[in-house]
Image (cartoon, rainbow, N blue to C red; front, side, top):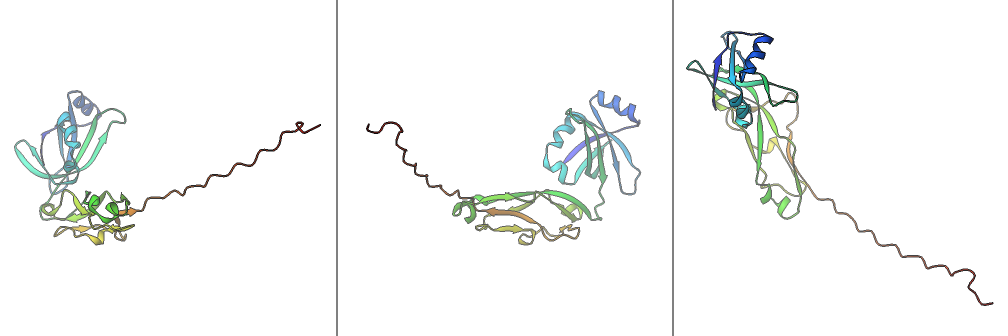
Length: 208
């Protein structure tokens, strides 16, 4: 995914505020052998780009003054209640250096699984993103998980799927996570109606 940024000369709170008034968002690009670079982006174009999943999870092509470089989105600062991007950070990408990046998990096939079709299970998507380690060229935009083989009360873990070639999961010492699980629906037992007690005879209506 490609986007355009512009060189930014001034920095500081006042300069950033004036920049936002003109419809631009201040940012910075850091990492690699080069010095950090101040940039600015068109706010409307950035706002729409941030709505796209790939802008958050994939290696991006940033064009500044006609030169294109590979970067990753690292941080976005949003206004607490306005639809306004206050600042954005990018990290330069070295094609020969492995990197860590969180990517979304996409699920498919659950409606065709026995768990859903035969046993009417409810499927819970437990893990929605994975932190992966790879070379920039091997980084996938997302990981697709096929749930068509899911059985009654079954689970799918990271060990049950195959990651793309050259891609590793960053475990941080944890066991392979559960990606999705199937749960049988709770059957409510019918409560038998309680028979009404016979009415007591009315007092004072006996024979004299």
